[in-house]
Length: 93
Length: 504
Image 1 (spheres, rainbow over the protein chains, first blue to last red):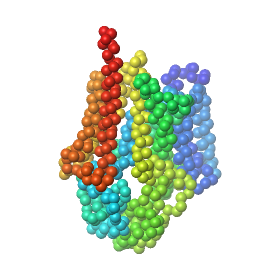
Image 2 (image 1 turned 135 degrees about the vertical axis):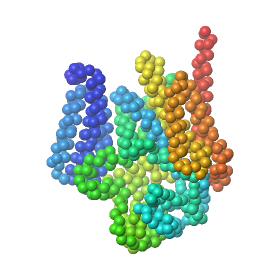
Image 3 (image 1 turned 180 degrees about the vertical axis):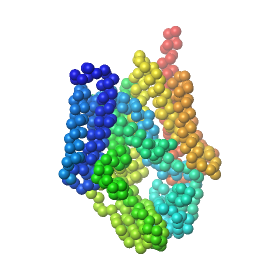
């Protein structure tokens, strides 16, 4: 909440829109790659990753406008992205 | 949350209306093409043909006329298409020949893109490289997805409001209409939006495939497997004779005990030629149609799609649900009605936006822009579609580049509608005039069929061939509904003005 007070409202809006568009797409895209680490057939993992990614994107986009704190929003997006990146780089499959 | 719904919806709504309208029309794309080509024979109720004989006919014809083509694509008739077609890419680009299956005579219908124009437009627009169009529509679809989700969250009292309809209360009524359209058909709208993204997922989310298959050739192979669409192998350069296509077709039909819909021959006349035979799309929900791939010179079976795994099924069913190719006539009308409700959802959403802000203080410019764009889209787009139909009847049949002219007229009509909406001083007058034009065009179309040499409505009715007649009937129904609503609106406006006159 603190960060919202110190920022003018149009910047808050800008960062929410950025989180919903770019942030959402990055998390979704990373999810679609991370799904390859699933212990499944490659085609199945690909389909799960691709078909699931749009739901993830829509979820991030919606949540970007629900959560009151910008810090928490971007923190969560960063955490999710880092977690997925870890899976992408060190995934087993 | 309500803000997200409002702005996400507003920004994408005009494009979404165009996509919903052309997509809804696409459920009847064969019927529309059929209506736009009166030269094509009607489907006789007792029409009989053998796909095997048609395949043999095409083999002879194409060997003579298209021996140097990269591939041939042969489509057989079905309950929605009375003719058999062959398409190939020759020296002059794409060429298509149409055959009457009962008489085995070639027909040359007037040049038109027909319903296919709407089908292409609804996912890649026009006058733009296809990839850009697909991305633009993908972004709008994603916004729609977010707007639906946030709309459901906003609409907490979904069940109670579901039964509330307060007509003739201005913004309140638009809100109720918007809710009625969206809540009643919510599962369909969610499905159609999500599955729309799924149909082009390899374009929007290519990262998984890129990571798993760094090699370009392997990647192409993987994408073709993802979408269950076989690639053609490369040509060897060695000439080889082509096995009888008719035999391959009857072999597949015997094996499936179901009709074949289409055949593709890649590199005909080459030793590397392949024949792919697809089963009819009417047989299953999944868009991944069963297929058999044959070696083309000996006719040996190379591959056939196995019983599908769960993920393949899931993907195939999603794409199948979106396209609705499996649907018989009854289901097709339900799809059409649900698509129309989608148009209604977007339209009432837009009208709600302006009616809520019209009498409040605030940005006049914003409201002016939205209102004019509303007119140019919600009425201008249907006018453009109707102009496309009218031009199909009025342009000379022998005009060169006829199909392109029809498309030019579509866009010209849309542009004129936009200009009219912008230049007219009073918005309500612009609404009224464009709606009147829509009604006139809707009434003109069935009339044009009687006046211009086209198909005979009476003969089709007598033979109960509903496919073309339905287009005329829908025009009349549309004219009635719009005319009735306009009369009601005019009466209401009159009764609202009168008391003021008395008072002054």
